Image 1 (spheres, rainbow, N blue to C red):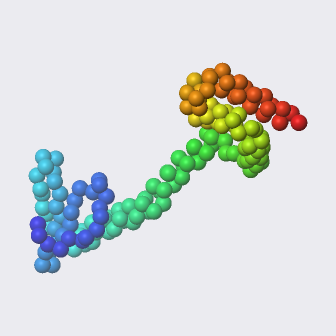
Image 2: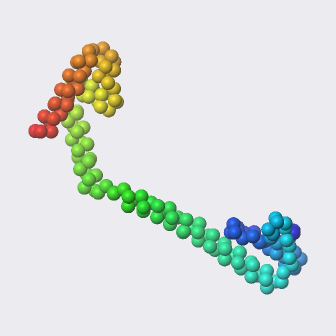
Image 3: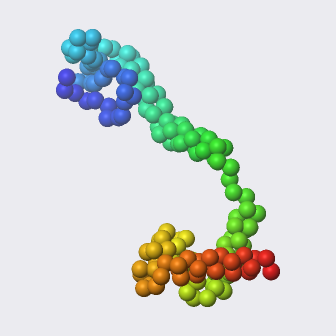
Length: 157
């Protein structure tokens, strides 16, 4: 039916449409067989259906602005409850430990530092480091073990 339809979003479970044509009011919907059914209705009934649609629209707006977001928030709260947040003290301790380890590594001789970082941070094997530096694998192994020994001494003092 061509007529003046209220332009608004409708709830997905709203099966009917209303419209006005030359001062006459109509209700239409698809029946169980999928056939379009149209009825002329009174102005009072039109106003009631119009009010239902407006109430649905209010609910849809509340859903969009509040309820949907609170579900996301609830999910976030659940994740926070499962994973214990890091305390400020723990963050400070981690930062201090990181700085201490960085300072200790910086104090190593250049060759030990380079080989230690290649082995532990880059994940290279002693053989790969030896090939890259053109030396024996045993020399790389000694350098890395000496670096670890020097780090232990650094932290024991």
